[in-house]
Amino acid sequence: MARPLTSRPQLSDEVAAHLREAIMSGALLPGQFVRLDAIAAELGVSVTPVREALLALRGEDMVELEPRRGFVVSPLSRQDVEDMFRLQADLAAQLVGRATELIGDEQLRHVEQVAQELAVAQGHHELSALEYEFHRLVNRSAASRKLARFLDMASRYVPARVYTADPQWRIQVVSDHAELLDALRSRDPDAASAAVLRHVRDGERRLLRHLDAVGMWSPPRNPDSAAVGNSAAVHSHPSTKID
Image (spheres, rainbow, N blue to C red):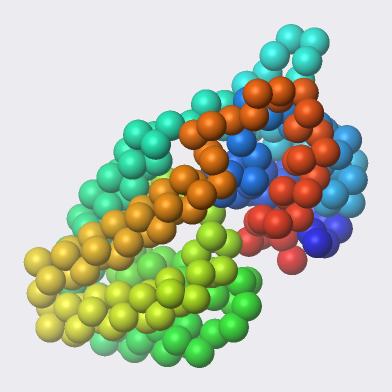
């Protein structure tokens, strides 16, 4: 069950992250209406930050505003998801290639420590936070602030809970990080780029398999019935930012 959110300046951002995760995981399907009062009740907030979040998501083409009807989840195709991962793969490969030349010994030790913590981590929040931190540290060491920022923005559309709930992903991510660390230690940009590309493509395959299973490409015939379904679905896929 989603825990109530407290009032703070970034509240609408957290609600947006919550809804973004629900949409990208298929908890909210294309064509479903998002009921402001239902989401507000789920998260224990007023309607205002929910409306602000939906307006922000409208700017990202995640939802559309239909006059006199409300916000509806935008169409999302398999090609859209594949394009998203292709962009991430390209940006991540460039960053890690630069990181192999620039990462310092202390930075590398920090990345290794995070990898070790992730290998024994338990629970969604810990796993997702450590996975994010691992790649953040690597990308930061590339000394390409804008490129890293673009990758961070693209990565927000990857629903972390789909992965942390997958026992096989938990095993694979440890192996992926070990390969990437080996390449960083040996200062091998080709090996590092290849490792991160395999990591991103594995994420793409897992998400597409999940979205196939939940019927992402076959939205409900009656979108007006989504008010009840939304509530249950959001319980299943809370955002990583909701504590």
